[in-house]
Image 1 (cartoon, rainbow, N blue to C red):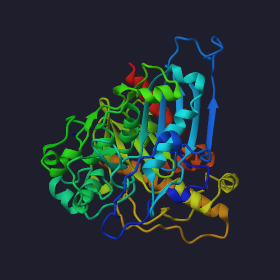
Image 2: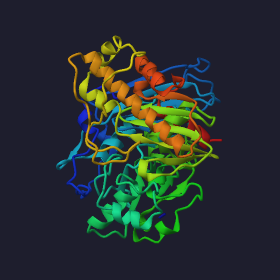
Image 3: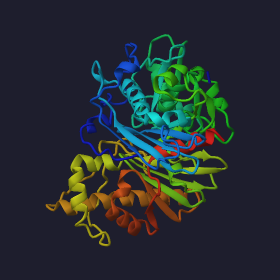
Image 4: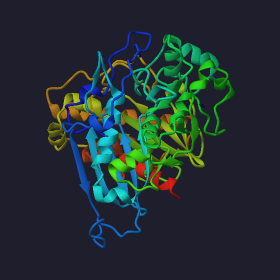
Length: 487
């Protein structure tokens, strides 16, 4: 077969995998066992659900019988959310879940955590609204992938997370891919696949690669081996030709690659046992997904070239709508297809995770009040949570720079916020130099969009109008994809 800053510090240790040995990815061996999802939804997982905008014409359903709803889910770096919208884009219910902490031997069992969270979110959708859901889609973090059994769908190895690097595979990938191709980065999906292929001694005949979003959607529709061209980009898929390139198909591991469809394409109906368990309608369909940063872009509805979205979540991701496709792995720059245009950009390891390591939510709010955003900070930092950067500089050995630390916490926070803004400005300047459409306006998504002082700092540093997107959650963008799948 071919977002957002988490407002709980309890799971900050789950954002990143255990450090692998230098020069190669960590061991991926996994003893597979079945975890029935019906029993794995833990009450201890924190949740928040809100129902809004209900009409009263039908007291039992809360809606007119003819109105249909569209469910989107966002699986970010630190937790998951859902949004339920109608055709006009009005949100009728939304909620979030933190990832539960499951361990398998010495490693975090991410697959079980995501699976549990998926069905927790379905359970959180108000019971009276579930029969009205016409379609479902979701997003996952870019370059997060699983090696699974192609017959059972069970993971055969520990998932590779978005920020893991496999430098051991990079020389081989560079030898087969075009120069400066998107896959020529240690954190690309293809490098992770090649690393697993070369280091795993198991029988590979019945194995398959799925991205995080692909696998979670498979749990809902039951058809193994389906992906989308946004998630498949970093494994080498060519969205312009709408096919895998010959240099990739000639490799022995090409047999693991999933088939690829456009994001928001109907795959099939929601599985019968899930419909029965949760009360969804018989005609509810499941659609292909996308990556979390693209879903955040879709949520902002920035539809004209030159419009951009900066997503300030655990990491910083930028996307610029351009008429020109840009690919340059030297700088971690790549383009995702969006219908007849291109979403150009990349993702930095700086962002909210660094802030959460140094300040509580309450401190961030109170200290920000005392910052003068019109005054430039003299502090020059490169805020990273750990060693390694990918965009706008692709350098796996880059060290975090968060010193000297002034006595004043206000000055320190100001310096970090302004330094992240400078990284953002450097990213947009790089895209222009490489030939992308020049940015003329920036919308902000993710938890960082709520900080008005930071927005003013960024506006000054970027020299552009910066505003919070009307919709800031990637789950909303995923819901728009679900809506697209029904049209």
